[in-house]
Image (tube, rainbow, N blue to C red):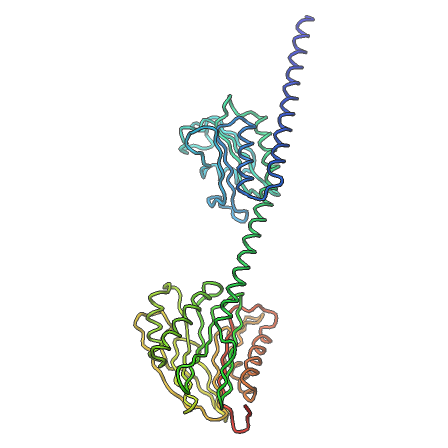
Length: 436
């Protein structure tokens, strides 16, 4: 009787010693993991170390971490997958059934016989998988990833293994998330810097100042809705006594539109050197852009030649907003002649017409970002308000008129954001009572 009690006490003591050694081992593992990953700023290195320590801690053959997008419930899109292995078997990857189970349950999972587990009926497992354990990486109850190991080398995964791997996942999740956010912030800063440089480049493509022509007051301005924009205006000398002017608008916004804008500018300038005639120039430019531009992309463009010796404006309009021609007596008309937007059709033709500018006449070229400026009531600024503002301020200098039109559109929109680029060019023949 006494011997039996002594044996029982010995067994109990041995079990307590085993648990104590296990606890010490766990503390060592967690301490080493914390030291390994605490000062790291490279996400892939942190993931590799977590997987390596996890394999060692539970004596598994392979391990993997799969990170997913926090804002999406669909785990099929994997952001990062890192794997480590102590054998030379086929690499293990979480299948969609496991990903879905972890998303729904967000708790540890142990599968001791994958090929016959009723929870995953019909799932075809790799033959080298004999057992597996998965634990969630959670940030405030949101699943950001899954830590998984397969095939324990010395038996089956125990409750102690599950508890330890859960602690590892809990300790690692916040560090992983912080580093991932840090890397995303670095990427964002790099993108911002690239956009800043793109904005500088785009700004350098636009005219630095308007041409000074006796008898005329000319000005141009473009205000992008984003850091870079898709609107375009230009002044191009095409020979003695002649100046080409244009305003264009690329479909879309941002960097893609800005890249196409640069292409459009180069194309127009190149074709001006061959034949600046509006109809011919737009026809050639259209053919080139149709060959090099994505089918979903296009550009509208108003292009004209000002013969300032004969005071004649010859123009063609490729699907752009019709410019206003305001006579000194207040009469107004729209410059409509032309054709479809550039790059729509491979062999489009463009009509051209000419108008004579008398002293006091002015022509206003603009992009739809101005007229489509929207207020809180979803009301556009519109052509009527634009025309009224032009007529009310027609005596102003060209640059001042542009400022007044921009100000008028912005006052209409008030605090609503600018959704599209605003671009204006004003051509004004100086009147009898005007000064240079």
